[in-house]
Image (cartoon, rainbow, N blue to C red; front, top):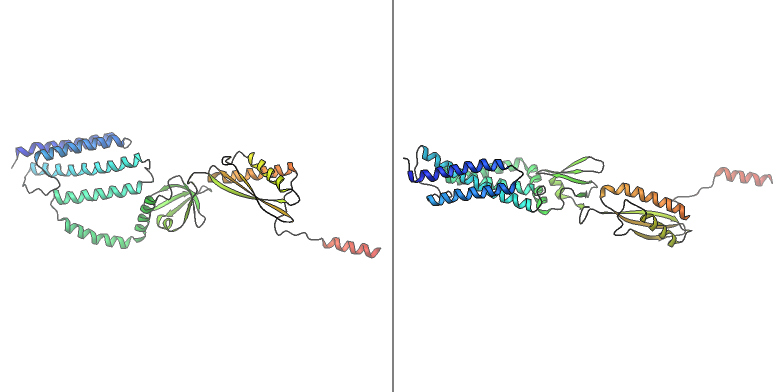
Length: 336
């Protein structure tokens, strides 16, 4: 039977739903705000028509339709639930864009989107097609247990990725060092793995479950600067103050290190042979450690020569007398 009183609202809802989908796709992915506005407007219009017609999409409709009216009723409800899902997802994506964390929050976004789509799918099955939701949930629970046992490692990586995303120990672009010595810049992270670009220009793939268990140091926080220490051993025949001044002059002449805060020259110790000096300076990025260290070593060597400072012998180095020299000395004594 064709109900004229309900036919017009159902047709209008279907038209609004289809028009909203078309305009939503025409907006493109690069305009999330415009997409959200379109979703809200069309969803609000569809909701207003449903309420005006006395149709409640979140309840099972006991009205019996046939033919075209049945198709219009089902499609109207499906379109309403679809627009509801897109509106909720639009709010989630707008929040992530406003927070300026689109890449690092991708895992959390995907999880929320999956939950929204799952909830809407179950709602459509239950409220539109009148399927027994309890039976479906129970069956899906058994299937989920089977898949969970079969995919333990994969699920471990997934949930570790979610934990890392929520904890935010690092972000895309940060330079991190693992407890086993592996280090590099984070270039990508997904559901299963995190990718590091090392100083040797290699990509290291770390499963999220492994990354969540080991300790790591984030060299990019609180800022990108990184401190380097360099030990210099000067002969103890020189005055320590002159050594300190020469080291400071060498550090001030470097163009590859950070001058604010100023570098530090620490006299670590002295004995009969050596004055141990530790140079502490910062570089703008962990990637600049090697060029900066090379420049500082060259400057230290140059200023030591200019100041007349002699580098000390390495630790545990010994001076051996030549056996040939001793033998010559004995022979000379015998000849006399």
